[in-house]
Amino acid sequence: MEVRRAAPGEWRTGTPWSMLLWAALPGRAARAGGDALALAIGMLIATLLRHDGRVEYLNCGGLLELAAVAAVVQTVAGIQFGLYTGRWSYGCFEEIAALAKTAAVTTPVVFVLDTLLGRLVPRSAIIASGLIVLVLAAGIRYGARLLQDSRLRPSPEQGSRVVVMGAGEGAAQVVRAMLRTPSSPYVPVALLDDDPRKRALRVMGVPVTGNRHALPEVVRRFRADAVLIAIPSAGADLVRELSTLAGELNVDLKVVPPVVELFGRTVRIEDIRPVSHADLLGRREIGIDLAAIAGYLEDRRVLVTGAGGSIGSELCRQVAQFHPDSLVMLDRDESGLHAVQLSLDGRGLLNDRNLVVADIRDQQRLDEVFREHRPQVVFHAAALKHLPLLEMHPSEALKTNIIGTYQMLQTALRHGVERFVNISTDKAADPCSVLGYSKRITERLTAAADESESGTYCSVRFGNVLGSRGSVLTAFEAQVAKGGPITVTDPEVSRYFMTVQEAVRLVVQAGAVDSTREVLVLDMGEPVRIADVARRLAATADTHIQVVYTGLRPGEKLREVLLGPGEEDRRPHHPLLSQVPVPPLDGAVLSLLDPAAPRKDLIAVLRWLAESPALTVAHKNGRH
Image (tube, rainbow, N blue to C red):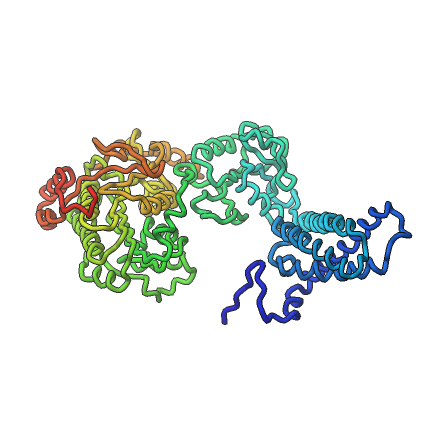
């Protein structure tokens, strides 16, 4: 049976008074009783003030009678506004607002009842008592809240003394969490913030003592053991700067998760963690248009291919936040599907029809999946991505990246998919490798699909994703765990980095953008030298780790680019999304490709298809 909670201000017809009173017991009855006592005291004070303190003018019987009537009115109004039903924590702003509403209703009702009962107390006393009661009741709550907070406050001797960087909402949340958890391993002793307007600010008694440059002096003055970056939107530059300072001061550095990991929820003590290499390399604030995203994902049928991979699984987690009608997760890796289901529902029973084991190379299977699930939005993340392996085996790039994507596009067109987002890579910009050629061809095939039907079909291009399987950071960490050496191809090689959460958040945003025959290129920030990453990792190891340079591999670039020759950086819809026109490629030309052809011949044809002029197809209705 489903029980619906009454909305604020809603009376349930036929609800017995005994049930309403039971809802207020036992602790809530104490609140109502305390407020009733405050009301009686308030009326007494207001009446005495009206009579200039002369007790002989008091009508004690009338005062008690009206106070009893007023207490009933106040209790009923308080229940109506949720004051005595446990809707809010004791002494919070919402409860004080409900208290003010209750007083605003009680005062005029008592005023009218006093008139009907023969003016038991002066009218001015009734009006004044409303204000006095509000102050008294709020004061009682404030005192109780202070007492409760003092009992919960952890002892500075039991936890690490922490200097908190940031005095915004994220810092306020984490400071409250630390000071209201007796077993908290952290005790905030000072705040730092670069905003000069916050210099006199205190958060639950913890003062702002300066900006980031005051960190060394503040750490020494407060005998701090750790520094906590409590700014969810903190960028990698700030994290690196404070990491260096903390190392010089010999204190631990902690962080709270970035905004994309919090996804709107409050910061908790459990979120506090050591600085990761992802924080140092690829952390940025990513603003998104929630309304636009919800508009194309909420209550829609969404399909994600490659759902068991790093990008695909994060896509599933973020798309699920927007409450789609269904989320279909497709992958040929059943273990990957098990892992992503486990991360979504905590069960991983593999008993959901929305978990689909399928290979995008299998056209018949794709048609079966689309007929059953009828997706309206498709994120196509399934692909082979390791450049050296595809250089050796270009036929696999052809069969999976190119033909697999083309089959996905054609299946989507036949089944009326409204939005199709193809995941590409920065290797497709001015390509010089099999991986780059194959992904550039898929960008062009997607552009052709966008020409031929009424839906929106686009590609999203970005660089290296931190934390993905096979990423350079993962490889380096594995090499450090084995005692080294860390292998880097060239001292000057550089790459773009972004965390998987940030990249996927922009991919989801890109799906909401109206585009025509375009690839949407994510702003990846500034490129990072791989040698610097290697040295930083080596420095954190317990033993000496050597960095060895091995030379660039076939198809590798010294420096990656996000835009190819002639591609203009236009950002009409989002400051972190460049929209670049793509020359379409008619899928009919794929008949020229033979997976059994000699390797060099196949690579030559792939290069020609990636670089050839546009092969036009029929224009979409009214679009050019």
